[in-house]
Length: 272
Image 1 (tube, helix red, strand yellow):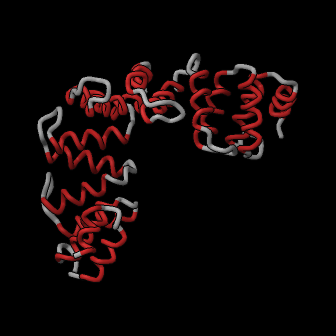
Image 2 (cartoon, rainbow, N blue to C red):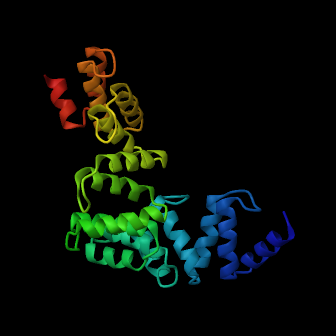
Image 3 (tube, rainbow, N blue to C red):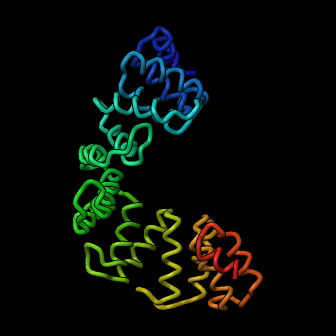
């Protein structure tokens, strides 16, 4: 253990809030000390009680995700609220709480207020875009949604890239363009957005923005199905049922429909 860590531990154990918060971060990351969420929680909690806003923010995430402590949405919301007075990033989490009714009654207007406080935060811009697209407390505006998705995508939001692809596919807020949609779905899939693989499969199966290739459609359906995307599992089942891009197999089709039985179309096919 190096000298700076020893000094930090000494300061933290003497009760200095900033040192406690810093040491909590060290334990959370395993930086200079063995990684320990339990010890990180201890120091974040002690620092938060003394009013350290960053410790409040980190502690809120521990309660929000149930890390080293029983998940407590109300406690997380309370801590995000306290941290937001000094930590801008906390507004995003506070907005998510208001949007989804986590630890507080859902309130779209307050959610939007939180996201609007972060005009350069990719995640906030993306969620705000979905609120404009769905008309959640904000007048529905597809063009505004697209503008927000574009900005969020440029700032690195993979979810925004996917949402933008959906807009181009549907022609919402932008001129319908299958080629552009395909390009964006591919980019989203490369970024790790699992459900994008399903849309790539649909594009290859139906020649949407790319030359039709049923074998590639099956490849992408299989990938999405492995990620648990039920409609991809159903699409794959239909390929086996109809011999599209793969050898016909009623047995395999039934197996896939059964796997996706929560999906209405799959249940209908099982009951036939």
